[in-house]
Length: 285
Image (tube, rainbow, N blue to C red; front, side, top):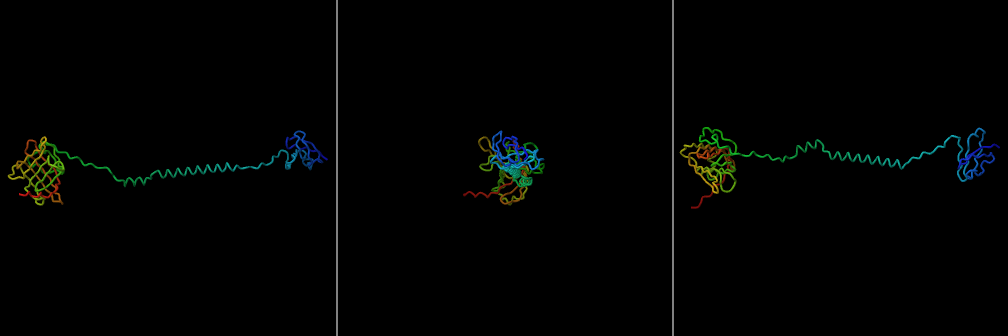
């Protein structure tokens, strides 16, 4: 019988015994635990290895050479892996949502170009304001030979020292009225009476009335004099060039230059588009 040593599995105390005690139970002299004696080494060369006994009630521990470590099973933390995967998926989902939102909120260049091309323009272009030309010797003159071209601008000038701009023109009962204001009584303007001539007979006609003409159309100038309306009738002594265009529906266009021989240097020059109104019914006798 050969002796060998083994270690207590509880406290590590080395215990000596012989081969006849293999498989029996002994009490550790240090921790007093019940130990099952391991099998004795089969050869004397294995004596250098320290065997380990088995605590009573435990499964036998396999014998390993001294210095060799028993393999430890690698456990994978599945919960941690699942949490990492969930975080990665959440991050990817957030990035995708941000990219989609950015693409929707950013208008494309083509859309901007189309919108700019089709967007209606609400800007209102204001017409230039008509201003009465100044009353100087270049505009007021009793000589038709010098006034060869009539302006295309709205007929305007001065009447009895007041600036005048035509706002409405009417041809009715053979009388052409150029006035300021579009309704009500005429308070500033000129009325030219052609003796009841109809629009068709005036269409296309050019009238040139010199200051010494023996017969001329009667011209009435109207203006405000304080709180009342004043009138001045001219049977002659004035200069006037009047060109009528063709009748177009209920309108007739024309150009006028009128110069009165008054101290206030009254005159009118420019274009008009007169509304043709039906003659007033004759008053019963």
